[in-house]
Amino acid sequence: MRRTFAVGLLVAVLLLVVGVGAFAEVTLTFQSYSNPNEQVAQFIQNVLIPELKKAHPEVDVKYVYIPFAEYMSTILQQAVSNTLPDLVYLDNPWVPQLIEAGVFQKITDNVMRDLGKDFWMDFFPGHRLLTSKDEEIYALQVHTNNLAIFYREGFLKQAGIGEPPKTWDEFQDAAKKIKESLGIYGLMFYAGADEAGTWQFEPFLWSNGGSLLELDQPEAIEALEFVTGLVKNGYAPRDVVGLKDQGDVTIWFMNGQAAMMINGNWEFGWHLLPDVLQKLGDVKVAPFPVPEAGMRSAVLPFGGECVGVTTSDSEKAKYAWELIRIWFAERLDEYYEKWTGHIPTLASYAAKIAEKRPEFEIFIKQAAYTLPRPPMGGMDKYPDVSNELALALQKALTEAQTPEAAFKEAASNIRNLFTPEAYEENKATARKILEEVLARTKAQ
Picture 1 (cartoon, rainbow, N blue to C red):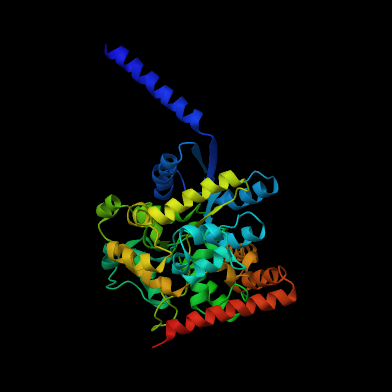
Picture 2: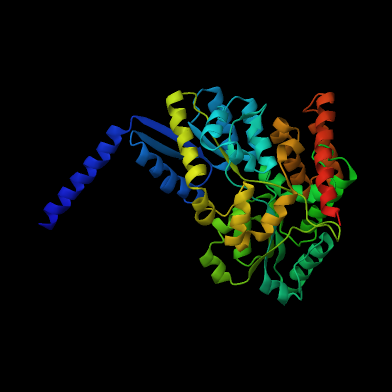
């Protein structure tokens, strides 16, 4: 009897699966570098896609994962070979270049019709700048993040450090005391030869008045000398240049191999989940250190992912937008409160989430001093500029070149990416943006 029931159940399930497949007249491909086991990917697969299929049973959605390191080159190849997916989820600095490359479809009419102008204007200005061009909207930034110092309070106390470091001098002194008294690294950070390596260096560069388009100037070289000194003196391991991603930094931190780490708020939705935090028992977060005492905040890049429609098929584009609409119009509260370690890109949500998730407080305060990366590095040329910086960082950290030689070579290579006129124009733009935020960090 039980076997008969089991066989019947199996047949019913198979019929259901076959039935669903038979009714799926449209299949969308959602491409992402969010590992299928991460919370954001889980939200997409377990909340958004079922919600879309509930309203539109004729639609199926295939979630495709591509590792971060291969993601941008894959999209560019897909664009050339006309094999783009229907939706993409991707890092925000890539968006301007992909708008130029014609990867995204315009979604201005969809946004204005279904979300409204007030909703669009609720995005922080930097997020609107990156996802639009010539008054047309091409993508929406889902969330944002920035960097701070995570520290193990127990290790700092054992090393005789009462307060987390606020300035670069205090940061270096704390790392030195931890190394000398506890025999573990004071600090762990990421310096791989990719965008994430650039991203982790930019707070040092910009807070010291350096610019991506002026790497041969004293402010930039001084920032690189400070970071390379942390490794050269043994306060951070040389392994920083060989890590695969920023999650590796947290593994060192969780294992007690480093007392402090530079990392972002997304870790609260990835490695530092509540059970892990409870087990470690002493994880705290401090603002990113500043080069001069008295500065209100470091100047940091803002991170975060965007989502956009990439199919030119009008029928598929309709359903692709519907999935995005469900995310922003119906599930945004749930997403920020339960499914992500990122912070909101909309001003009205930022205040609300700060009250509900106190672990984000420092990151949300720092968000007022964050900058979009592309305008700071030649807009659509930013990926190439970033690559030059990341390579120079590796050369300096491995002592293949002095910091000054590495940055002078990178500065020359970056200048050659532009015409002389375009270089001067982009340099002036980056300098103007930087000076404005630096002035705010020093205002009394």
